Length: 357
Image (cartoon, one colour):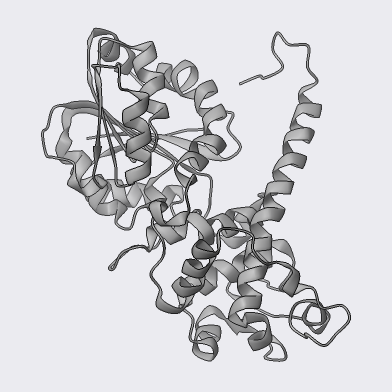
């Protein structure tokens, strides 16, 4: 995608402004992580303790190991903790003077307070202790709009005009009248984009969020070919008649994405297609460090994605960066799909996958 095309824009300058803007968002999210570290006594627990793993910090603080790992990696990516491998972390004495030692004139951690509604931050702090996070409805009023606000511009630019032509036979099916399923539909942006372009098809969206589904129902009140259901992805019925299924930047938010993928496989036809949009990530810390907003990714995971992914019992607990291409390929194969194609578009945040039975 060339945003400068036909607009007489300097694309390098556009990218510089975009990165500068997102760095400010990164600051907001890392600020929340600093507040949680201060609130939970994590900095004090690390002060003078030397190198620590998430498990060791969990033992000394009573907090949940998986949540601490995401918090630690956010701090490592932000340069607030020293780490070589993303598994072992050290709060250096100089950092402790700023983050842990309340009597020092350089102490600053306490200024990061009241960043989100108090009940949401209370819930996140409890999640560190219990291991159970907040689903999207528990993340504060307006959270149902946050995903579309962040992902909407790129979805509008790439989904229909760029991605769909790459999917063999899908466009023809949509023109003729296909059955489309959007799992994790949120407020309904992807459904709207497809229905505007292919009005002969019928569309159904699934999402467990009360507020997201209420918003989607209002959005589609006058659209007879679009319906939405308040339910999780694993509750999709095994109809076997879906031509195109979607999971747009949401599998990593689900407590059991493996069950959702299995349900989708039972819903699609043997000639059907599943499109998966997921965060660019790697299982390797060194590779993820190339992401200039990696701290924001881990902070967003704690505040939003991992929180949703661990909002139930018996979860995979993936979080924002947990569904890298290798993990996704394994999950789709386990669900009964056999063909897995990666599409790298001009999207710095996401990768798109074409998955077929």
